[in-house]
Image (tube, rainbow, N blue to C red; front, side, top):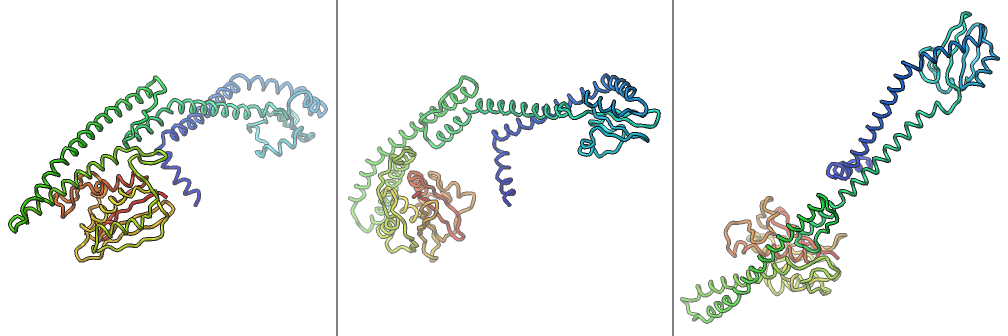
Length: 440
């Protein structure tokens, strides 16, 4: 089971990690080079043995057999073994002797075949029927080729490790470029990617910095324009609302007057939401104090939920399931904005005559979860990722009764992120559930 989990965890990492694939490539390359080198050397040496060394050794063995005499003289054989790094085995009708019986029993179990390879080299048969087999004796030389092979493999692996370390050093700027690109994607343009080298990766880091600077200039220009328009619209909207309030409240004017006041209130709310979204989207998070726009103070989230429901939604079909929670460092004003938007969105999309919407809180190992669920028709799955985008609405008509202008959930996501949390939306079958995860 553990082996399966380990394999399942490593396989995707190996498949998608350039560093792991490079390391595997270097190891395979080292093994292939070692195998090619050792195989080539073995063929070269074996070819040399066949063409040059074997005839010389055969002639030498013939001379040794002649020196042993017929029948073989054991005294001469023992003296020969002591003087030379040889092993001698004699099999025949008169003499049965082996200079290294323990070596033969330990290393070879292939019979007396004269063609056997290894430490038995050549065999001769004398005129009186004795077969004499010569081989290498107890000498370290016979183990040197194997040791040389392992040393060669170790050196190749060491060189491969050094080459991998150097390539990893060369590719190290990619990590800084990736981290910088991720920061830029989140709207944090400071500090820029540090350019440490003058090669292609250094040029790439400089180009990414230039791209980020251009994006920042465009975003700043867009923000300045939006804030300027929003501020400039507030004054004429205030005057228009005042003039509408001063219109005579007669029977004939009541309906258009109320409609005009509703439209003016919606426009004022839109401007306030735009200004708030710009402040939240362009504040800086990640410092010890958190988001720069927030004014945090110890807050009971359950009490905040109860206050928002009592003040903004009295008499509405709302059910609560609030578990005991610790106090959280929250910006109360913006958390009220989040709660109002989530509850208002759930009430507008809840099924007529259906169960009341459900507002619940819960704590787990990740933090505090706030959930708001309605029991309406829900949303198509392909539309879920877009619900928190600014001005996105699941239906095409931009009517207040069917969904506002599309800034409510966008603001909720910004408030959650400003607090270091997350916002998730999913179909609950029936209805839609919006979950806000706040860290403790």
